[in-house]
Structure formats: C-alpha cells, structure tokens
Length: 138
Image (cartoon, rainbow, N blue to C red; front, side, top):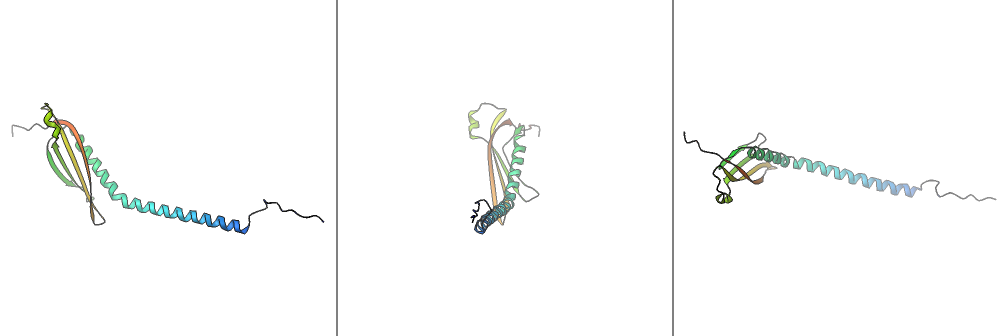
C-alpha cells in the first residue's frame, strides 16, 4: 500500500484566509479614516487659504508701486475678508542721506470670520522705494 504525501503548496487553510481577510479589512478601514480626515482638513483650511491668497495679492499690489508714502488704508473683499495696510518710514531711514528714496516698513493685516471666530494674518516687510513728492501747486 502506497501512502499519499500531501504537498505543502496545495492551497490555503481556512485560518490563513480568515487572517488575511481581517488584515485587509483593517487596512481598508484605516485608509477610509485617513481620507475622510483629509477631506475635513481641506474644508477647514479653505478660508485660511483664501485669506493667504488675499494677503499675497495685496502685498504684491503694494510692492509693485514705484512710489510709497506713509499711509494707513483699509478695505474689504467680496468674501467678507478685511485688510488694513500701514506704511511708515523705517526707523533705519534716519541714517540715510537720500532725499529721493526711502526705506518703508509695510504691515498688512488680513482678518476674516471662520466659525464665528475672527482670525487674522499679519505680514510685514521692508521696501526701498521712491518717496512720494507732495505737489506744491495744490
């Protein structure tokens, strides 16, 4: 009588199939949790991203000016975000002897309301620019 020897590669046992199914299910649940958290973060950060875009737009508008003068201005965008710009002579400007150009300190404050809370971003820089010459004929 011949004995049959079963080969070890003849298939998977029920236990191996159950363990792999549990592992695969755990990975799928974890991936779904991460993707839903990512979507919540995208929605939560949308207003902050809009505020940063506004800040970049306004700061670029100021920095592209050929002449600057000390001024405080404010305004509002259509989406409700508000801005305030403060341009003042830099404290280091007194050391400079140039009457045509000056060093200006620029401070931009962006504020918006998100979930009934007012949030703000402040952006500051220093710019070397031509001084606005007041018109003496006025």
